[in-house]
Every structure is written in structure tokens, then in C-alpha cells.
Image 1: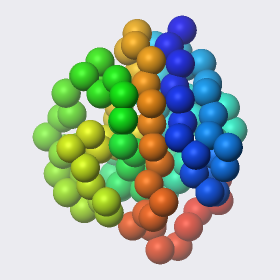
Image 2 (image 1 turned 180 degrees about the horizontal axis):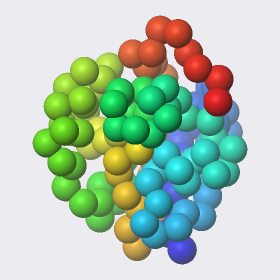
Image 3 (image 1 turned 30 degrees about the vertical axis):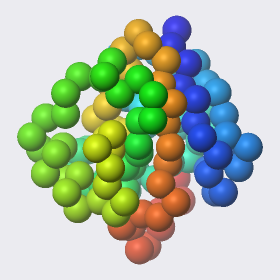
Image 4 (image 1 turned 180 degrees about the vertical axis):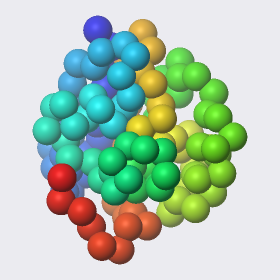
Length: 112
């Protein structure tokens, strides 16, 4: 099982975290399954950018983003070349290091 290392985030993972993920799950599903409550205002329906993450290591092991994801990412705050929507980035067989951006476009935070 691949490991997702989550870099420290003041709200979601103050000490950082390392979790085991299932190949074929999205990064978002894996984080939520391990009580890392990343925002996902559209309930993972691929309609928003609140689950934006930056894949610091292992980016090349992910499938290429689809055009729809790239269009949505253009609206995310703090976009970087390794940015992905965690609901659309499917875990492969390699370990990943993920950073959850400190700020989100979601002004009315949802508690999930």
C-alpha cells in the first residue's frame, strides 16, 4: 500500500501525518478515511476547487489531469505546477507527499 505523507497544516494536520492509502482511491478519499478533514465543498463531485492540494513528491506517478480538472484548477488560490484537485488525483503504487494549501477559495467553510 502506498503511503501519503501529509506536510504539517495548522488546521488539518498540525504535526503532519503519514497514512496508508489504497491504490485506486483519490487523495481526498484517503485523507478523509484517516480523519484528515480536507475541504471538499462539492462532496467530491468534481465541481469546485476546495480540495486543492500540491503533490510535492510522487506527482509523476499520478495520471495526467483531465482538461476539466485543469480548468477548475485555474480558479484555485496558490496554484503551483504540482497542484491537483485531491478528489480527482488517483493514488497509484508510489508514495506521495502532499501539501494542503493554507488558504482556500471557499469563503463559507464547510464542516464535514
